[in-house]
Length: 247
Image 1 (cartoon, rainbow, N blue to C red):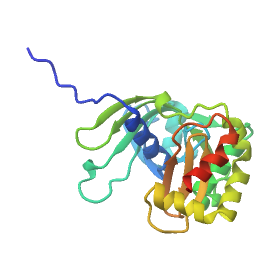
Image 2 (cartoon, rainbow, N blue to C red):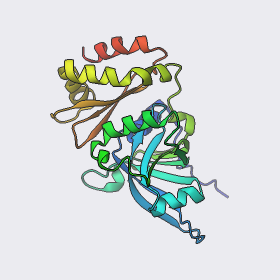
Image 3 (cartoon, one colour):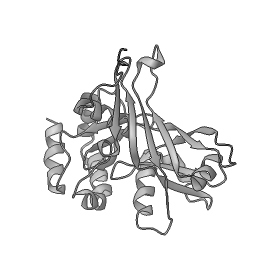
């Protein structure tokens, strides 16, 4: 009797980085929930994705939608990210993240931060973000499955995707001013981050997010994720890293 072949590879730092980039550079993703009518059937829809300061995905949804009613009835959800690209769609990397949704209270301490970060990534949502029936949900990762292409399958833990740093709260306080400064006074550096480090095409690139693990950049249509070599432990490390990346 022969053993079944193990299709999974050992999860290494390269796989973890690819997973983080696939999640944090996603403009949207396929959100799978369980139908709220008791049928038990999966229900899949597309949702815009934001990222909180700790790396948790964020969605903005209407209470009138099926997926919101499903999350209120059962917090379990899965989120699929990764663009197909040219050629065979199965040859391109994708990530499935299993989560337990947490509704973000409008009067809670986190709402302002999450709203601001989401709007920078998706400015057109300003048209409806404050409608009474719209709410943010955080989707903290529990586990994930990464398919990096044919023959490259990995299982990841929630800890592989979150950003754990003592600098997170302080960085969140200064994020807006740091982004405004970089986009206004260091536009060439921002373009360098996108076109050189992320290998993006030329465009009007702007920083839309700074966290302890990297930068989120957007040209208005596409998002790019630039991961730092190491997670920041102190906000004083940010300036030297940004300067080094522009070298």
